[in-house]
Image 1 (cartoon, rainbow, N blue to C red):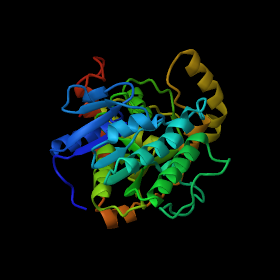
Image 2 (image 1 turned 60 degrees about the horizontal axis):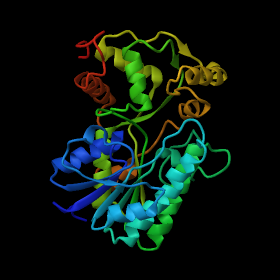
Image 3 (image 1 turned 135 degrees about the horizontal axis):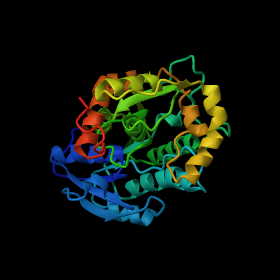
Length: 340
């Protein structure tokens, strides 16, 4: 379907990392954007955006936000590496996903794009490429976040079966500029810069640039087939690979110690206790370490074939992460100006 200009599109989760990049891209293309705001506006404060209060757990608020919209991009979600967080993960990622899709159908939205995650898929078997045909992470063996993404997709597909013109995209590990909160990986890049990490972890993930994800989301709106999933993957790199790239960009020496996974898994409960006592964001948990042992071969062949999806070199992503951190004043004075 051809993308219309100067019609209202609604974005939930607009203040997040992907949401910020998506809204900026929509505004640059001349589209009228309505953002559903729950807590804060982030970097979009002051932009030409129509702000509407809303909560994905309240379908009435979503109906008010979606009224008159031609397209809805649903990004609002709760990422968790520490379980269901008292039911918040389920209420946001499952009930919220169902509420948003149902509200879009009730409001006559013409196109609906649900932004899910690679975590909705069962990562096993690790020896086989993971594509859209892979079974979902629905069993009790899967952690709370993975199950929530799979169950949220199921809710959306049920509404699509009722008539919603919806499509689903599944990004992998998102990195890139305008990571203002920052995300956990953004915090890792900052910690590498400020030498806060005593060691690295022997593991990795498939990383994708946020700008490529946004391009994939917009291509899915334009050309994605109704009811289909599209994996938006990038490049598998180890934590050591990323740290080495960070060193090459900033000139700041990376940690030389790489902890084996068995040691990291044994230490994780103690690190969680220390981080909680220090009131620091959790970084190493059993769930985050599980992610670093995920499938290394995530195929975006379908998205490339049907959507024209492409990815940039990860070296460019890491360089631009630090360039944006510096422009945003997040690198401080200690080594400011060293990012190349």
